[in-house]
Length: 228
Image (cartoon, helix red, strand yellow):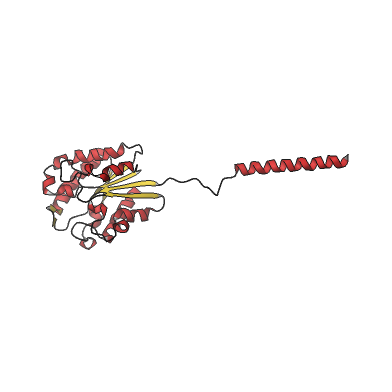
């Protein structure tokens, strides 16, 4: 009789131990399958300066690509720059009419960095400069109204060295930048000052308008300092 009771006690102990072990396993975190952390998406909107014109390898050397390296693995940076793009709706190549415009919205960004205006300063486009603040504000709002409610930044473009396609640095500095200030104030968005960052350094350009790899690095660092 004593032996039967002993066997029963051992069996009960084994059952209790097994139950306790199962409970512990259920409450323990699954370290083999950690939760996937969503990346913060950064959309870089712009013209050929953003696209990386003049660089031997834009996929590595453009400012968005270098920005991705600086920001690290927690961010996904996408380059939506396209050559000759403008903010003005009535102009030679409105950004509004490009596939990059629609793709940048489908990207569902958390952060939007816009650097446009250089091509708007061409003489044929600049005749509509009185519409720039309104058109730029409309562009900003197309991003602000996305479901992701991204934070939007606008950029002063880099300086111009000499005259390019009728664009002069005087027009950029004295006419375009003040209009961008108005855009910033009206839309409560911060300005990233790439103009000052690249001023006085013609050696950072592949030509008189497009930054080289070093110039693109300076732009990436300037953007990083503001958005991070």
